[in-house]
View 1 (cartoon, chains in turn orange, purple):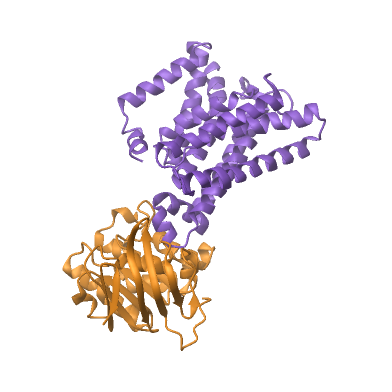
View 2 (view 1 turned 120 degrees about the vertical axis):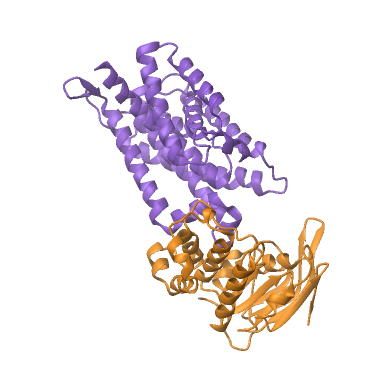
Length: 227
Length: 295
């Protein structure tokens, strides 16, 4: 929307980013960048700070260091700014609104760029999300909490897509999913990437992530290294 | 026809309980704080307007406008300063302290201020629609203020329902209640909605106080009773289900009127609270108290 896409600027430029919870440092001095249209995997064992990197980038937790989204310096702890500049998080454990319908969950993804429900429902990003996961169509009026794990993951990705992201940050998209469903999710992520969206995917096991990602950032003990 | 008249009177008080119960549960969904001061805002509305009109000779519309603006400003500042420090400040509190204490303290504070400003006598805002009670179907009597209360409840209730179900902002409010972290991820400012609803329900309570006070009359202590009944009705919806809170409010109002009419005018309230307590003891989970306790 308002993201100044200069062509030259990387989609994400992270310099010396740290995230701390009280006295515990979860991410220490992370530096990496992601080019526009690239798919980057952030891998490493659980509890080493991968999710904290994404939360810091998306503005859900406070961080130190410099983060630029398409060249624009991102303020710390401002989700709305990040979303308006094109970075949206599909969080670990999905974080849906269980009592609201699947359709309402998805349409709330549009909240960062409109306040009109009618405009949100008629928008391109909302339509695109429905198109990418036709299997959710029959369940749109069902409460999200009653959907299967795989369907909930799809709804979470759809909510992310409805925000019209330029960078989609996806945290452990296959956690607890059956193999066939996990393949379906990755198939969709590959299509989102092919459509030109920059992807940042956090995975504990790099194998699956590297089927769609061009690059990998390895995180160990809160320290990130590019390979 | 005694039964019909009692039901009508019960519907009027019940709709007030229902409105307050909905206010309590909607705000609890968004903030996890129980607003025990909602009744005190009603009392402030009624006695504030009465004071400006009767003592200071203000015209009624100006008195209503100034009272509502004052209540709104007070609610806004209280949320910005006290509740914000309590939930997000350096020494932020958690759990039961925040859930109860900060609005309970507010309730006492408002009562104290009201006692100084308005004294201890029973007063009421001037009737907005004065005249003798209307007679329907030859023997049913309806107070004009009662009709206004019902109309206000229906109008506010349907506007609120339309907002919640037909707008993106309304869905965002629901999302704040369902999953605050998930709401933030979608870029929803949960603090802003918390503030809007706290201030909005304070003003709504004041409006109902102004409209209803000609029927019952208010003292500086009336707020606590209204809050208590709204609170109990909200509890029957597990504090999180405005729809059930609304029905519970209406049921409590009608039961109260029937008990007052048929059992004892003096002990009606006592019997009512005994019934309410017995119901909770008998079916705590079915009545939603399970979710209230587990959060």
